[in-house]
Each structure stands twice: as C-alpha cells, then as structure tokens.
Amino acid sequence: MSEAKITEAGKTCIRLVGRFAGRKGVITKLLDDNFVEVTYELGKGKKTKKTNIKHLVILNEKAEEKSKPEKKK
Picture: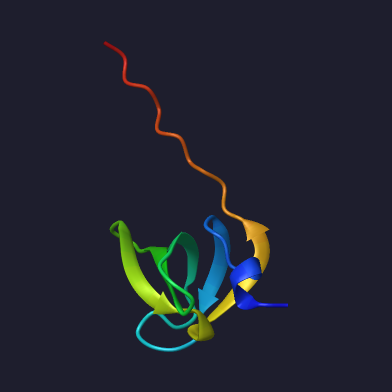
C-alpha cells in the first residue's frame, strides 16, 4: 500500500521529529509525494508547517471541521 493513498487532506496525524514532535495536527494540503502541509493548534492560535510524510504517524481519524458562529447584525 502506498503512502499517497493513506495520506489525504483532513486526516489527523502526530509529528515524530523536530520542534513540533508529539503534537497532533491536521493535514490540510498534499504538496507532492514526500511533503504535506500540516496545521497544528497552539495555545495562541494555529501554525501551518510543511512536513515530510516520513516524519508523521497518520491516524485513522478525520478531523472535524469547526464552523464559525454567524455574527448577528
């Protein structure tokens, strides 16, 4: 089974190496065969990083999309 079929936007993953090691993130975009864009939630907000697929453990769960509440006029 190839990595490309397992990896898709919206899947939850855990980073294994680097500054964000141990953090959960959500794959937002597939860049090419080796790299994806992952969004991590931090205390202050969100951080998007280009990450090698080999540095991730991809979980079998999809991230839930959070909808913003509508503002009253």
